[in-house]
Length: 121
Image (cartoon, rainbow, N blue to C red):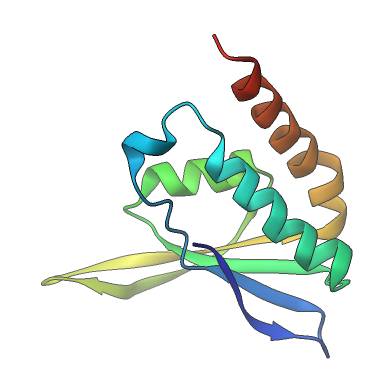
């Protein structure tokens, strides 16, 4: 499940959220994450005409931060001790993606990942 929340048509921005894949074993070898992101970004940029998507990620979630940056998102800021997990506080990293970055970097990378996964090993 993937959603686009806080859609702000006045400022042409939104936030992707609730990124859940489901049964990991059933989707192994299938480019589900890349296909879901491609659909979400297509909705945001191509259908709704947004110019920006953004979100926050816990700084201790290094794999997600690395993945989002690889997909073209830029680190735009950090909120110190912003997120609580159990008894610990973590920084939140603000990430953003502009429509021109999506077209130049994100879309070609998503297409490449999807194509490679479909070809198989």
